[in-house]
Amino acid sequence: MSIPPVPSSPTPKPVSKIWQPDLTRLPRLTAARRFFRWIFRLKCRLVVFVCTKTTVLGLENYPRRGPALVVINHLGDPDAVLVVAALPYFPEVFVKIELRDIPLLRWLGDRLGVIWVHRGRPDRRAISAALEAFRAGRMVLIAPEGRESLTGSLEAGTEGSAFLALEAGVPVVPVTLTGSEGRRIEANLKRFRRSPVTVTIGKPFNLPFKKKDPGALQEGTRVIMESLARQLPPEFRGVYAYVKE
Image (tube, rainbow, N blue to C red; front, side, top):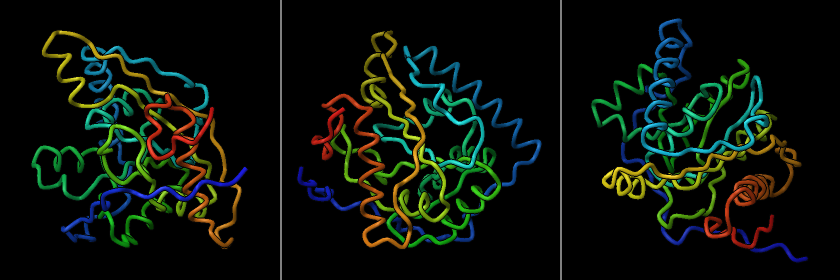
């Protein structure tokens, strides 16, 4: 069977206009930050319960401890709340630096401790922060599409997730969401309805390549994105529609 061509995005991936690398670092897990994360997770679970009918599948697949790279598809703004509520442990999260322009999100991100990332740029400090997290036995969450999907289905993945998995030699945990589009949840709330949402946690796997192998990043990205596609209904697979269950 021939291998399909590497998917590409019909529109360019975003590039951060903001450049503040001094803000990018791995957050320290102080007692205050651990407590704030615990409170935040409780609030996320309350919001998810009130606003959605969320089903979590494959919870037994989530590792009890790190290091691991958690990859998700990105359908809408509610994804962050849904994932935090669904996962049993709070991972380190990549968050686009542009959100610091919103005072509430800047305050929340700094209290929770996130890894601010500059999209579409060679953000070496973000990479260093993730690798440091892995060395400390922590989990890191990233959306390999690099943005919220413009089509409502999978877009082409960027190579950042494959680079991290290969560089650190850590397992990849695929997590997929359906029904988490912001407009869908908002429309249902206006009708006093809870939106059906599904969060699926797949089995961890290691990329079958070495970081020095020719084409390792490209093929690693393909494997990661196909693992997400395999967990999604056909209509959500987008440019990876060729993937079969």
